[in-house]
Amino acid sequence: MGNDRLAMVLAIACTWCTGAVHAAQALDVRDGDTAMARISVRDQTRIRVDRGRITEVLGDIYDQATNPNGRVALMRDDGEGEVYVKPMPAPAGASAGELGQASPAANAPVKLDVKTDRGTFALLLQPSDVVGDTLVLRPVGMVRARPESEQRRAAAHERAIKALALSMANPGLDANAKAIPVAGGGQEVTLWKEAKFVLREQRQTAGLVGQTYDLTNVSGKRMVIDERELFREGVLAVSVKRLTLAPGESTPVWIVRQESQD
Image (cartoon, rainbow, N blue to C red):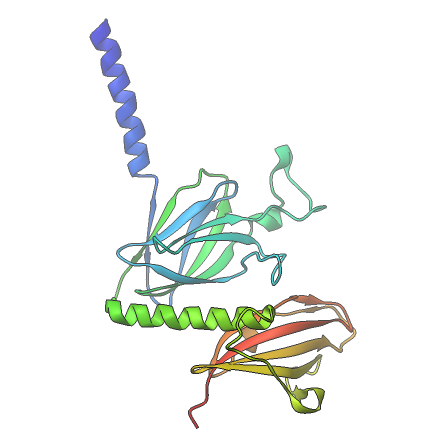
C-alpha cells in the first residue's frame, strides 16, 4: 500500500514538472514581421529572447506622466534583458462582463515593438484568461548577433538619449545639458493644420540635440496624438506628456534628435 502511494505521489510530481517545462510559449519571430501570442489578462507575462536581450519596448505602454491611458503595464529587468507585461485594468465606468471580468475593449489585442540585440520584432498580444507564463522569442532568418563591444556602445547611446529626454521633462536633472531658450519666445513649426507646434528651447549633449515644444489643439475637436507621427529623419525619441487634448488645450512635447553633421 505504501509503495502504491509513493508511486502516485511521484506520478503527480512528474505531471507538475512536465507542465512547468511546457508552460513557456516559444514563438518564432522574424525581423520586420508581426507575430501573434497570448498573454494573461490577470497575471504578469514574462518576455525574453532566446540567446539574446531585450533593449527597448515601444507601444501602448502605461506611464503615469506621458500615457496614463496606456493598455499595458511594463516592468523591465535590465540585468537579465527581459521584460514583464500585464494588461491594465479596464477604466472606471467601462462595461464589464460576468464575475468582474474586464470589458471587451480591455481584451482587444495590443501591438508592441520589441527591440533586441538580435533584431526588432512586432508582437500582437491577445489578453486571455490564462495563467501568466513565459513568452520566448526565437529569432529566425538572417539575424546576426552584434559583437559585445557594439552592444555596449548601443546601450550607452540609448542611455544618453533617455538621460537627455528626462532632463527636458525634469529641468535640473542634468546640469551638462543646459536649456537654451529660442529667441522671440519660440519658433512655430509646421505640423498639422489642427495643431500649433512651437519650439521653445533646446539642449545639446555629445552628438544629441533635445528640443522642447508646445503642441496646442487649435481645432474644434478632441485630438488624440500618436507619438509615431512625430518621428522624422534624424529623430531618435519622442515623448508627449498628454496624448489627448480637448480644443484649445496644450501639452509639452520632448524630441531627441541626432546632431546634424553639416
